[in-house]
Length: 452
Image 1 (cartoon, one colour):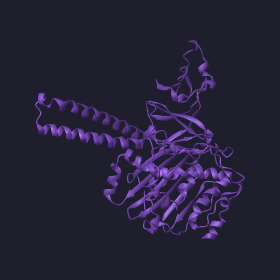
Image 2 (cartoon, rainbow, N blue to C red; image 1 turned 90 degrees about the horizontal axis):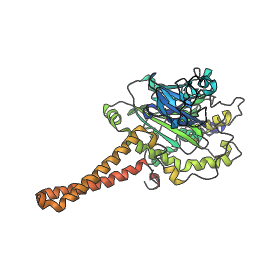
Image 3 (spheres, helix red, strand yellow; image 1 turned 180 degrees about the horizontal axis):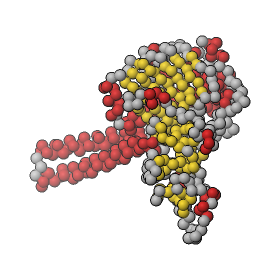
Image 4 (cartoon, rainbow, N blue to C red; image 1 turned 30 degrees about the vertical axis):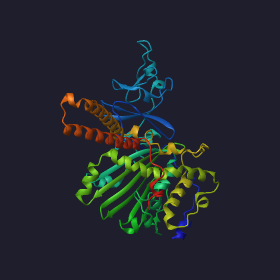
């Protein structure tokens, strides 16, 4: 197997991958607001997403007003148009300027092509909003990076979905999730176990412009789950597929969406097609926000060190296989992916990282990287705050009642019940406060450092 690993060498491609000429998922549809515009940055291009109620479709524009270049995402949706917050210019679903409030009644400046907003093709598939930044004529011919298995068995899947904005490159994220061997140590004991670490062999197809496929015949957990098939769909998607585990079909799907140098959005889908009804019901009715809070820790397990890894890699003048020592068969998918990167290019290749390392506080931060953009977590956080406020009011009223038990004619039993309610309410307030912090910050050190 080592010979096969050594054979995965970088090549110089005559035709680099054009990162603009590809579809990218940028949001779960259920997290988008239909009443307010949403900003997103893709390949350093600021975008604004908004809902056109009349056509019942999402629209994606460049988040730049052609008038004075301010972000349209700071404006509002009014009368079926997206309105600029600076001077009130309004843009229809096609991007045409419908109104310039400060021009004369018979003015026609809004009809100029220069007054139009830049629009991009977008589509909703498998619950994700995809956008295309390249040439309009290519949008229909380029494949959408959807997951075929999800369409093959409609209605049979339960899905744990999560996203997070990550402070390292999309290429670093993809290399990490394609790495089949790190789970046992990095994610011990959340979803991995150090005891499962052993030698294993991978097979990989020819690395092409469109990506590659691979297979791990034995599969994870020392073969207990069955064979795992892996697909890298260039440039931003990958999935591991265990078709016939003892539980049913289990998948791990990740989209690494390049936003800026040193930043990306991780869109993670964990589809399960269980054989048994019971786990299917458990997953189906588990609150989405509860799942997200737990999955944040898994993402942070890697995040705490990968931003440093990519800075070290950038210092090297050699190719990946020469810079990093990868002598085992378990490294084959990583080498195949790095061969693709070195053969066909990467985004922001002409840029370098800022010298400063990302702080631990920034790496563990959850609110801006996830919560505020997630409809379920944002709502759960608001509800927890309301409950805690309610507990304070109930506790305050209870304490007010205690000194006047004689006037109110309260018995000793009732007094004891009130005191118990106050105590339990205080405990609930404290525990909810601890849980509330999980929507803002992650935990450090990671559990692998203190769990056997």
